[in-house]
Amino acid sequence: MTDSPHGRSVLITGVGKPGQLGAALLQAFAERGDTVYAVGRTLPDVEKLVAKIQQNGGKAFAFAADLSDEAAVEQLMTQVRASTNGRLDVLINAAGKFVPFGPVAQGSLDAWRRAFADNATSAFLATRGSLPMLRTAKGTIVYVASVVVQGDVSCAGMADYSAAKAALVQLMRAVADEERGTVRANAIAPGGIKTAAMLSLIGDAPGFVTPQEVAARIIYLAGPDSAEMTGEVVLMG
Image (tube, rainbow, N blue to C red):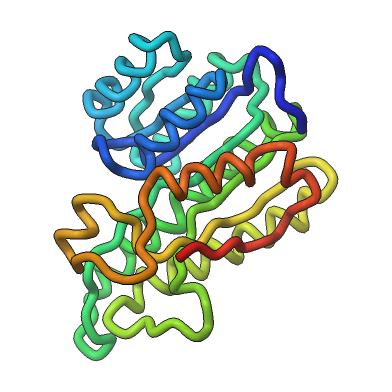
């Protein structure tokens, strides 16, 4: 994949509130001249962020979908195909959610299922729906994982989130192998991201990174400078 002088088509999931990673990604790709298709759960929230991009001359469009719902994702992909003429250069699977789980001995099955829906199923459905468009462009996928996928990081109290992010990484590796030579797939695994929501849950800590720092690394993984990379997990923090 190479950068077009007229920009690429980029689909970003997990775009919601200002200050979060999705908003930083939207801005970073739009500033490069890419056309961004931003997806969040609540359309008015996405529209507010997209409006700011458009006011500054950027190209962005807002969509809303529950990415853990198969029918909703199929409808979303129909809309995206129509908007992109069936060609997608980049998919950023940034949708995800961290909620404190507690010890496994007291864990809730509903919370476990929700963690997988938010952090793994959503990426699977978005990937599956996007692959025909990505193949057309010989595009690339970046998955937002977490530092918890490292073997030497404690997962105590967050077994659900850690297991879901590990599943996300294995999904990425499967896609990288299955689509080798056509679509690249890599993951970024940051420590805590300094968003208001994360800081309110667990506070600041060493190794935390800003949304803008993560966005910059994702820009690299989605661009021509990393053209030889696929199936890799890039750690941050």
